Image 1 (cartoon, protein in one colour):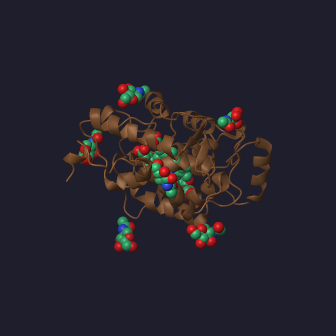
Image 2: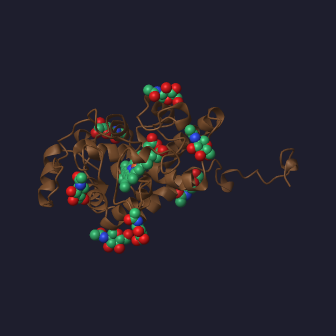
Image 3: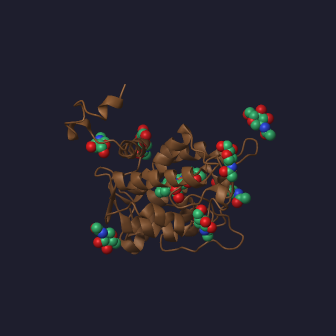
Length: 264
Ligand code: HEM
Ligand SMILES: *[C@@H]1O[C@H](CO)[C@@H](O)[C@H](O)[C@H]1NC(C)=O
Ligand SMILES: *[C@@H]1O[C@H](CO)[C@@H](O)[C@H](O)[C@H]1NC(C)=O
Ligand SMILES: *[C@@H]1O[C@H](CO)[C@@H](O)[C@H](O)[C@H]1NC(C)=O
Ligand SMILES: *[C@@H]1O[C@H](CO)[C@@H](O)[C@H](O)[C@H]1NC(C)=O
Ligand SMILES: *[C@@H]1O[C@H](CO)[C@@H](O)[C@H](O)[C@H]1NC(C)=O
Ligand SMILES: *[C@@H]1O[C@H](CO)[C@@H](O)[C@H](O)[C@H]1NC(C)=O
Ligand SMILES: *[C@@H]1O[C@H](CO)[C@@H](O)[C@H](O)[C@H]1NC(C)=O
């Protein structure tokens, strides 16, 4: 979704809203300082690093989230509002009007096991980028252009590893819905939603640097990303998560043989 720093920066000139935390340019980026909060979401961390969200990782109000998601990655306002509304439960306080990146670290509220780039809470840190975990996921990213199948393979592998080695592995039907959106996110933000593909280099740069891959040529989508877009790409991943191939590709499967004899 991003590239060519100058043109990207110019496109922000049209955004006039005042934000006390400032620094709303793609070219501006700084990692978290010692007192800044960061969390398990590579995109929330990225937007804080750029200053589209408060750099200290605090005070993520609905207005601040809508501003950041719209300005940085051209998410439609109603989609951004919905995402924020679904996330506000991260703040355990009554009638909360904001959440912080530290709130997102609460295990099994939004954060969950078997992430693509974070270790399970059971093993210690559930929110800092973990190269070992990410490398495991990337083993299944077998081409320069990722598609739903490669992304789904990485997701499945992480679940198998977690279920095998984490005695406290927790993964509900709700987790599945969340993770489909997370696995789809790179295609939505950095890729081609129609083709269901994304350049692997952009995705690796994003995860490993927590920075928008402008210097690799990415620019944000021209048309606002809507809820329908997110659901559509999520369903591509859902479909690709099945380990079955279509029946027509295995014409002998219905023939009676020894294996079929075990079926009811
Ligand atoms: C209000 C907005 C958002 C909130 C509150 C949020 C929150 C979260 C949380 C809590 C996780 C951790 C889940 C886990 O345990 O793996 C997560 C993961 C993730 N988020 Fe977000 N997110 C938001 C928007 C986005 C957007 C716009 C993107 C687009 C790129 C994105 C990309 C991802 C990805 C790729 C992961 C998976 C990381 C991994 O598996 O290692 N998020 N998000
Ligand atoms: C939090 O952000 C809102 C804008 O959404 C702003 O009005 C408010 O002053 C901020 N609060 C703090 C403590 O920074
Ligand atoms: C939270 O909101 C509810 C419903 O609006 C209200 O009854 C309650 O008093 C509020 N609680 C606090 C602590 O503000
Ligand atoms: C990364 O995750 C692995 C597997 O859970 C864990 O053994 C290792 O300590 C983690 N590394 C860091 C730096 O947290
Ligand atoms: C362990 O599993 C329980 C039940 O699923 C869950 O509530 C808890 O948060 C998990 N703790 C860790 C550290 O994984
Ligand atoms: C992916 O993007 C990088 C950086 O812009 C570019 O060098 C590379 O050629 C692209 N890869 C493919 C397969 O198009
Ligand atoms: C945002 O998307 C919704 C559908 O999800 C649509 O009704 C609305 O018109 C869109 N708004 C903008 C500004 O694109
Ligand atoms: C669903 O997945 C199957 C098997 O991977 C694939 O052949 C088919 O084209 C997919 N359908 C859609 C709508 O993506």
